[in-house]
Length: 349
Image (cartoon, rainbow, N blue to C red; front, side):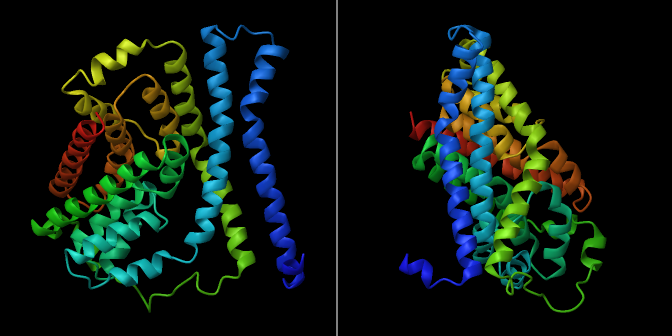
């Protein structure tokens, strides 16, 4: 109580409101499984052993669980991330030489707000600010591939070891791929108008003057914005997971992408590329495939292919990259993803 007495009234109200919201979040997460068991088994009288009941319970339980995780993760990360603006990131990377710049860019890509839908403006802005092409590509690869939502979900669903493997491998792919593309002179395959774009004025840190209340508001708004964008993909991902969980035989996956198939990682990557989703939308399907017995390295390769090599992102990048660089980009990243899949299947066997 003495601590609260020292906090200004307005801030005290915000702290109490956050504490109340956090308690409600914990309560909802705790009762989620019990609630759907009661609704489906006791109220609706459905057979717990029936495939339809299992699939329906999976869909309802995972929809609420992942929605709750997303709300908590997005809010916390957005508030923390408000201290690292895209302007500050661009200023930090400007003029950095390759090698050191690739490492820094990949690390900053993990903590900086970015998604595949903003690939074109981010690429133009970085190049216009003087960031080398290879360094820019390291950032461009790391930011959607190793994003904070995926980290939070993986940590919750699979534990810290798998999460650490995911982060380390994604950052390594971004560093190596960006460095390779920079060394082969990738700038010659960038559309000319990108280099003709100039940034007027100085780089301004748009987050420096934000108050704590504004950062909290930013977190709440980001939750609403992201959930509005991803809810169709989230429901499709959970729906596919429910179908797989309830009806698709385990042998189907183990035959084509299981540990017994030497080409399993390649199959998983090929399956992931046409999908249009993000880490949050694909995570329920990854969890279901893991329950079906697919190796973790194969699943990591599948997830990385979905978020880093999706066809919509390739179409967006084509606006600024010529076909030669787009092909090299997809090839280098794809080789890295496949290598990670096989490497970690061997390490985790």
